[in-house]
Image 1 (cartoon, rainbow, N blue to C red):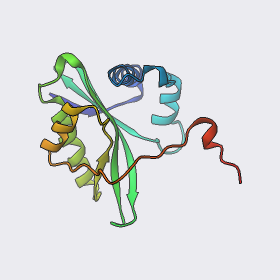
Image 2 (image 1 turned 60 degrees about the vertical axis):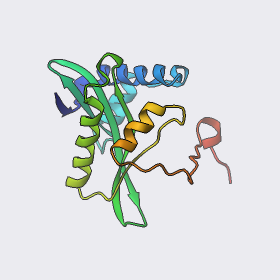
Image 3 (image 1 turned 90 degrees about the vertical axis):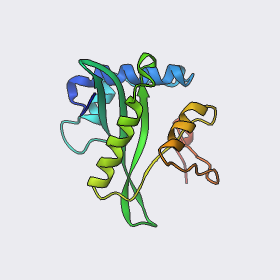
Image 4 (image 1 turned 180 degrees about the vertical axis):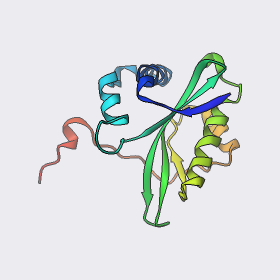
Length: 157
């Protein structure tokens, strides 16, 4: 197994993984991502990328991905790594790909001097919850995620 950073030519593959994840989460109707949008945000001509992506391979076959970005903890006064999405193709689950991706990201966070690594998991995804807890993750049940999107994001004074 190899894990490598994604490059611009991987955008179609990344979009395929995003769609696969959305299908799994029963949220395919919410995906509006396009190759063009991914290229602009992950591999901009100028400026900093909004996020980073790594791809997992078994032999020559891409079997999973993780997309993440930097956050900041005021309490720790250090950056952190936020894992937005992780996905392994169903045919390749149980082969250590997810664990390898998580280890890779934790090592990256440590190498960058980050103070934490965080992510969200759907409450119905028991297999993922058990997996994350097996890695030593602690569920933060006292927190509730809030979100503004679309029209609601256009807050008016």
